[in-house]
Amino acid sequence: MTGARSAVLQAVKRNGTRLSIAWSAADSYTLSRDAAPPAGIGDADNPRLDARRIARGLNRIARDEELFERDDPAQQRLHEQLAQRRLGRFMGSLSQLDDDTYLGLALHRAIDDPDDFSTAHASHLALLAPHFGQALALRARLRAGDELDRQLRRHLDRMRSGLIVCDGGGKVQWMNQRAQVLLEVSTGLQL
Image: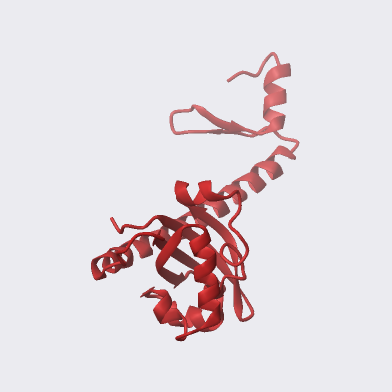
């Protein structure tokens, strides 16, 4: 759809004037290159994660030409590191999820691809980027609900009374440890 050779989705956390990568997901080509991305690309030393560049690329589709000053040596070093991984032209998006968390999507073309990302590719990425943010927010809410569920079950397992949770049809959905013991040892209690 975009001609990208590599696609990386990252959640990054603000740490002073820099961002650090909290987690990352990538396409199979990118993942097959190394077990871990090399320093300067897949870590907090990536120059794209500098506060000045973040402000330039926040809530929009950006290319390196828009993020870096002309003749910036950091851009040259980054492009050399990317070339070693056979990656060339960049297009990406960065959106703020909460006070200190951002979601970044980085697309790179193959180093030997003569084409650049087009306006249509940028428009396509602009349409997709918010959906990744929504998916990440949903993931965070589900994880929070799962953690609350685990904590509640641990608490209920400590009760001396047996507790059985059933659905509307009376089918057992869950029971605490005391209820399981009572059902196993009691002759007068059954489901």
